[in-house]
Structure formats: structure tokens, C-alpha cells
Length: 419
Ligand code: B12
Ligand code: SF4
Image (tube, rainbow, N blue to C red; front, side, top):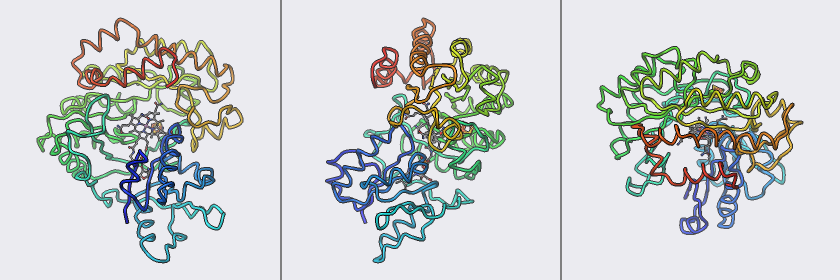
């Protein structure tokens, strides 16, 4: 059976002639692009399988599109394996495979949910020999050739706007530390030096992070650069671990800072304090680690004054990359259920965090749209920011100059041009 993942062009699909095409539909905003690939695959007669967060929460609606055949809901490894096995047999019976949704005799069937694999190490290490050679490597992050490693899955927190809670049911599971090192070593041996940890919550267990840093050192993996997503509370509490992270090559950390308003933070169930925010940014900066701060504009109960305060706060914190995202009710989130009646835009393409798709309680959606642009302008058109990009020694930030598309995208936002 010829199985292809994400063949993005009709010609590639035609050339490869796959029996099955699997497409990730994790991001809600990329549903349109996903469905374009799906339609190309269907034109070639392939069986089309979707997976990912958006596909999981929108399985019923997506299956109304006749080009989509099967949806793998939730964790994909075991379900997809069983699906491929079943399709290899004559009977092709998939009715007992948990985690699947599909059409049968004109009806949409949702099999029972797939239980989570208890031991993540049971999933084999990715076969990276299937990836293109480094000189033709297609995966870039801020212009750097990167690979990604998942060391844990899930998050026990309950932020209202985040779909991880529903996807992984607040479970937090981890790979063994030896497995993490094995995977990073295999990436380095292919000539890649930059690694993004794609954990939802990398630093929940800071002693584990410390052990991983120690093992990287012991295994001679000392010429690499790492990125991760972290929480401000655990970061603020562990300056010694941040020091170890810096020492082994962590150069950029994403922090969900969200808002300086205690009311907003409480409303989204973020469970962090402003002191922790300030302290975490300070500790990271003291260790020469760049901070990617994420801020939310247009919270449900926000006023214009709150938005202005968020922007001022972002400027005062001096986060190296400031990301302003409009509060967006994504499928599968508690927020979606809470404000469903206030949603005014149903086009998933607009769920790109630059469009306000719902009516906040005290603001007009158009005002929110305008203020997110103002936030970017205020943040990036400062002499200080320009100077920082020019002067910084940080590898991730420096890499922006190799990445004209990132600049173009930022410019489009600032100039208020459609993406
Ligand atoms: C790491 C990460 C990032 C990194 C990416 C770094 C990189 N270079 O890879 C960064 C920080 C850049 C990032 C940015 C953003 N991210 Co992000 N990110 C993640 C995160 C934490 C992990 C993604 C990942 O690689 N997971 C590991 C893989 C193995 O898991 P997976 O993709 O879910 O796949 C599994 C299953 O879903 C399934 N599956 C998935 N696809 C398929 C396909 C088939 C055929 C099958 C069978 C199975 C299957 O099987 C897999 C194995 O079990 C996820 C949360 C999450 N847990 O997924 C959020 C997440 C994907 N991000 C999200 C968002 C919103 C964003 C941003 C838009 C944030 C913003 N406001 O700007 C940006 C936009 C990025 C972009 N360019 O589009 C949301 C998407 C929600 C949605 N419905 O749209 C998520 C789900 C988190 C959340 N808060 O809810 N992100
Ligand atoms: S936003 Fe981060 S901390 Fe909050 S639930 Fe999602 S992954 Fe966990």
C-alpha cells in the first residue's frame, strides 16, 4: 500500500499515486488549505485520512465533505496503524477500530474514543532517513533548518482558550530521558543543530529538564540550539534550571504571558501572577535567552483601556518577540462553548488570531482588529526593537535576517494588508 503524508501539490500526488493520503488538520485556520490537498488527493482516487486537533473536534462537519473518507480522532499512532492494517485485509472492516470517524451507507459513524498509550516510548523513534538530505531540507523556523522533538504530551492546566485540555484530557505523559537524548543525537548526526521541543508544557517537571540538560552535556550534544514552550510560574521558580538550559544552548523560550490584568488571567484560568511573569522574563534575559512573549488582545470582558495596558506591559517587559493574538474561540476549547452564541464569523480561515471572530462583551470586533495591528506597530516600529535585531548575538533572532518571508508577513500585518 502506498501511503503519503501531506503531499501538497497535485503533480506530486499524481506522480506518487498513493492509495492513502494522510493530512494534518491541527490548525483551525489551515482547514481551507487542508481541504485543497484533500480534493487533489480525491481526484487521484486516494483514500483520504485526516488527523489533528481541528479534525478531532470537527469530525462530524468535516465528514460532510465527501472528499474526506476517514478521521483519526485524538492520538494518532495506534489508530492509524490499525487502520492501515485493516485496509490491507480483504474485509477492510474498520468498524471496531477505536478513535475513528467515517461515513458508512450515507451515515457518519464515530467509533469509541481511543484510550491514550500509557508508555510513550512504545511509539518508535521517527525514521528520519525518510527526510530529505540537509542541503534540500524543507523545514525552517525563522529561517533556520530545524527538526522537532516531542519529549512530553499534554498539560494538566485548564486555560479556557487552549484545545490541549480537551485533546489530551489533562494527562501529562513523558518519554524517557534516554529516548529524548537518542532522538536529539540522531538529529545532530544528520547535520541539524536547531531543535524545537514541541511539548505543550516542556518545563512542568523542572528536575527532569535539568536531567535532560545534564545528559545532553554528557553526550557531547553541546553545539546545538533549542527552543521550547514554557510556563512562567515554573520558570520563575527555577533560576538554576534556566541557567543550565542556557548553558546547553536554549536560546529562545515561548511564554504564554497573555495579559497584565488579574481579572483577565483569572477569567481564562491561566493561574499565573504578574510577579511570576516579570521574574521569568528577567531570569531568561539574565541568562541571555530570548523570550517570545504571547499576549492576548480582545479578551471577553476587555475594554480599550485593558488593551492599551497589555501593549504597554509588553513594551515594558521588552520580550524579544512579542506576539499579539486576538482571543479566538477554537473548536474543542471551553471558551468555544462559553461564547458560542457570540461567534459572528464561521469561516475557519479567519480563525488566524488577526481577526476578531466573536463579539466581545464591551468592544466591537472591528476595534479589536484595529488594535492588534496597532500593537504590532507599537512593538516593532520602535527604534529599540530595530536596534536589538541588528545588535543581538542571539542565534534565533539573528536568523530572522535569513527569513524574508517572516519579514514580509510581519510587514503585511503592520501595513494592514491581507495575508
Ligand atoms: C509546538 C507548537 C507550536 C510551535 C511550532 C514549532 C515547530 N516548528 O514545530 C510554535 C510555537 C511555532 C507554534 C505556533 C503556533 N501555534 Co502551535 N502548537 C504547538 C504544539 C504545542 C505542538 C505541535 C506538535 O508538533 N505536536 C506533536 C505532534 C506529534 O502532535 P500532533 O500534531 O497533535 O499529531 C498527533 C495527533 O494530532 C494525530 N495527527 C495529527 N495529524 C494527523 C494526520 C493524520 C493523517 C493522522 C492519522 C493523525 C494525525 O497524530 C499525531 C500523533 O499522535 C501544539 C499543541 C499540540 N499538542 O499539538 C500547538 C497548537 C498546534 N498550536 C496552536 C496555535 C493556535 C498556534 C498559533 C496559531 C498560535 C498563535 N496565536 O499564533 C501559532 C501558529 C503557527 C503557524 N505557523 O501556523 C493550537 C492550534 C489550535 C487550533 N485549533 O487551531 C495548538 C493545538 C495549541 C492550542 N493552544 O490549542 N505552535
Ligand atoms: S495554554 Fe499552555 S498551560 Fe494553558 S492549558 Fe494550554 S498548554 Fe497548558
